[in-house]
Structure formats: C-alpha cells, structure tokens
Length: 350
Image (cartoon, rainbow, N blue to C red):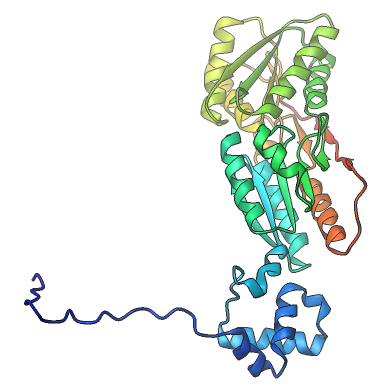
C-alpha cells in the first residue's frame, strides 16, 4: 500500500542507523591509559609497553572500536598499510607471492591493501594514485613497465617502491624477481637437449603480458643461436586450458612437423596435454612439452608436466623484508636488485 502524506502533515521520522559512537577516549578510559597512548598503539604498537598494549587491545575488542584512519589525529596510522598491485588476483603465481608477503607483514602488524590491474596500465595508474592518498608504508608493483604518469608519481614519493616478478630493465627503486628472457632461453635449451629441432612457442595474452612476451623472446633467441627457427602461435585471451588446446590444434595444423613446444604458462600447457590426448599424439615421444609456473596440478598431469618454477614465495618474503627493514629505520641501497632465480623441472612430458 502506498503512503499518503496529507498537506501540512509531517512525514514520520525515519530511524537512522547509528554510526559508531565509540571513540578513542572511550578506549583510553576502558584501558586506563591516556588517549595519546591509544593513538601511539594504533600507529606503532611496538612503541607501547606490553601491559598497556594488552589493555588497549582488550578494550578495542570489548568495545568493538574501529579506528578512523581518515581522521587527522590518526593520519599517520595509514602508514601501516602496504599497497600491493598485481595484474590479476586469479593468477596463482601472484597469489603465492601476495600470501607470502601478507604472512610476513602480518607479524609486524602491517596490513595489505590489494589491487589488480588486469594488465591495464591506466588501471594501475588509478590504483597507485589512490594508494598514495593513504600515505602507505610501501607500494609494491608487478613488473618494470608502467605508464609515464605512474613512473612520474612514484619517482617523487618518499615511501619504498618495490617492483616484483621482473628484473632486467630500468627500475624505480627496489626490484625483486628474475629475468624472464632467461626462463624462455632455459626452456628452449632443454627441448634442444632432448633432441627436438622443430620448436613452437604457444602463448596467451602476450600483447598485454609483457613477461610472457619476454619469455617468448628468450625462447626464440636461444633457438636461433642453436640454428633453429621457432613457430610462435598465440591467442589474445587470458591463459586457460581451453586456450592451450586451441593453440595446440592450430599449431599441428599449420606446423605439423613441430616436435617440441614451450608454453607461456602451465595453464596453456595443460590444454596442450588434453588436446594431445584427444588427437592421440604421444607425449613426449612425438611431442615434448614444457610449461612455466609449476602450478599445483603440474606434477599430477598425465604425463607429469615439465615446467619452470619461479620463486614466487621467496619474492614475497624478500619484498616484506625490505618493507620491514625500512619501517625499522634501515634505508635500503639505491636501486636494490634481488635475483630470486628459477628452477627447471624435468618431468615426463619432455
């Protein structure tokens, strides 16, 4: 039934949901400490005595107090947040790195704010601008390639900027990762050592994924140095087993002599194995295959997938270490570079 309001009559007052009424003063009173001690605890818990910290933590829990990080008096509290920006939250590679970083940062009471770009530099630019407005303890980016605006913004900030998952190019501050062209070269040399001479590289989304393109370039270059040509077959969609199956079908149709395949990652390689089974192509007898990533299914494939394992967890731990050291007052060397390397795993698919 519709509500009828007569002229001159008052509209019934609506009940508004109350915003939080618990203040820092309430927490201080409950914990029997000063408001300044509560403020210090929220910004730097290690600077408060164990007994005071325990009392404040208990008060916060009992009163359900949520600090307002935007308030002027607590503006510095936002410096305990670390902004991590990755290309995709669906990608297991980056999930491992973020999980390792978060575990290490949590021990220091540092919180993670996660954003993902879907390989879009404009989206990364917006995320960086938002992160900087919160005065983060550090900003962690994926890769060394950014828009001109992003690079300019980050070159002027005083907080640590850590670029992860890639080495080999100009860096803003610290860089932790490995050389992707070397990954591709290692895959090519492995296949060549197995006696393969007709090589193909199968890649997904390489027009956006710079690191996959670098792996492809390294593969092609190493094959060229061995006197071999490479067929590069790619698809613009994100990596998946379905894309891998499509790429393998196309490869065997256009380049039937192919006897060795490297894939931009294990998802693509999984699709290759599925399609080989469907087409009754013996692996590795007829077609050797190697992926990248060593994802959870790789060792359980039939046959088990040869792949290259990046040190995703080590990248996260090293990034967290640099951030914690900075928070403790240790200034890192300019242009710090940490090479976490990679491992080639030879299984039965090659």
